[in-house]
Image (cartoon, rainbow over all chains, first blue to last red; front, side):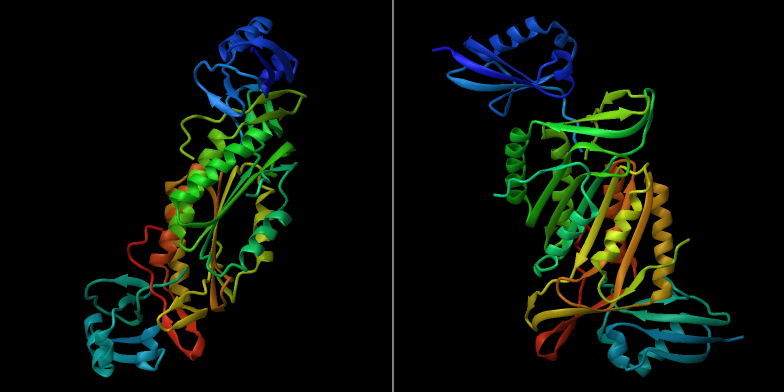
Length: 79
Length: 79
Length: 148
Length: 148
């Protein structure tokens, strides 16, 4: 079974994509999600971002099993 | 000219001496003051104290020239 | 576990006072270490900062905050930890971050507060957009060299 | 140079709030580091602490405080330093020491506040007498191993 993913964009990135969230279906892993997102918003290549899978930062590819939330986030700047 | 000194006792020490201040005349240096004070209040030997000459901590003997204030102080415990 | 973290707009002095007052009922506390982050009216190449607009990935921030809290309680002999961060616009002079750490002794409160501030800045998914005069803005950058 | 340092009795939350509020008019401040020392109701071998009675060599304390203040301004890029210490009786829960350090950035405020607290405890001629239930008392001792 392939996964359904809600993709969130935060901060500066949401201004690049002009969306705060999109949905993507039939993806097998987080790398696929990243490829789809970058293809849809090529300007994202010019920015640093972090990726969180289900509210946990990830640094490598992860398999997706059902419904997930994947967030694209600029470097944090709270405080 | 020998000096005139106001001697102050603080904290626990003022309970030992039962005085907060005394005056001593005709003393040449701080060691003399300390000797006079210790002779008058021998129980002070049992306590740690710091000495300040004119509001400055001193660690060695100092000559006295005119009017001075010498404070006998227990270790500090503010805060 | 308490799950409050975000406050809409600047954090008021009344709110901060109420927190201080509450801790005076706890007579096993000897040290209260408080950090208040305040928005500066910095002059930048894009103009004068007239405010910072904060956004966050709130659910993730709450989860991470619980992890940070647990790790600090494990590491330091402290009595309590409170963290509040603004969302939305905070003008210069306004408080956007309020950290409160209490302990029996000052060392624990100090080091826990320092580590907490560093973690809040580095690990919580929060973003500040510096709003400039002349209708411009730039995204705030937390320098990586900051130890706290 | 401001020469206020001592406050009779506990330092009120209203006084602390007023200080915080004043600093919000200074828009070059980004970090406010506050330490509040609070009297604990410790259980000791002589009984339960029901308060601390503070005395000081006030004129000497004011002089030393000026030296500490000058040395910190020289060492750290900070905007302001405020220190208030109680005289007389402060009951458990009451604030007896209020330290406030402001700076553009948090590192300076943090390290200056830490050094300031350490110096206040070690260098200011102030004494605390712990008053016990059962009409007893013992003189407070600041342990020498405390780094802050």
